[in-house]
Image (cartoon, rainbow, N blue to C red; front, side, top):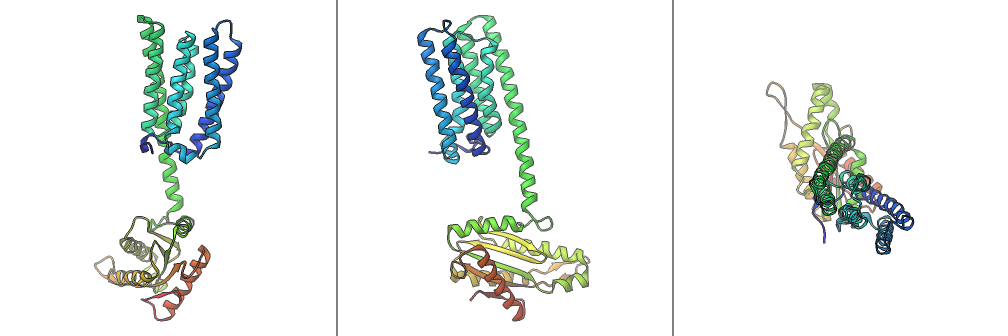
Length: 341
């Protein structure tokens, strides 16, 4: 069973570590408080607080030792701050203390939810914390003052949670932009070498994959005759043509550098490699680049194709096989493809 995406952590590993740290800290605070506060606590209250502290230590161990991704999918990272709100509220009722010094501990699960969970989970945690705190306050002080305290404390907690959740959203958006800039080529928008290697390595681990290495025929002559701006336009145009040939979401297109482009086709069978390469060559041939003034510049490519595991078993060998096939295609006259033997 998996919880909805909105209730999951922004980063499961970081969330599990934060949850383990905060639950452990809470247990360390609660256990000596329960043991050494008597005679203010009755034996039953002391036993309950000690049991909660031991439970917190158990949660800490489980969060620290467990698989963070699996725990997150099961809803543990959402359940921990919700459970924390319930524990704080119940402890306040158990000890008969709903003062500000007692309710301040609600900030611990609220901080965890607001900073580590996605927006929906963060807001639900905050709402639950406000309701739990309010219920405890009114239960112990069923007067207008108790109701006022519940509203004031609840409003403050909700405001803090909303501000922190929005700050986390902005941080994630900034990280996403930085990641895209780091992994994408600035000119064509295609994947850069490092991101491409990651995608290809993942595909190799899952089964068969085809690698098509593309080189623009006469690219130096295009730059010399029309200028580097037209050369850049040609690369952008070819990138769009290659994207149009992607048939599945898991297929990726990248730029190795210069005029060398690459297409990764996970799951492509050995017998289908030649057809995909031929389609790519034909698609570029049929899509000349529109120049200023209405003229059209014919473009052609040479493609070297290789297949794993038929032609290679690892990343470097697959690149080498595709590169050797590309060299054969260019030597044979260009505007064509070759498949690794």
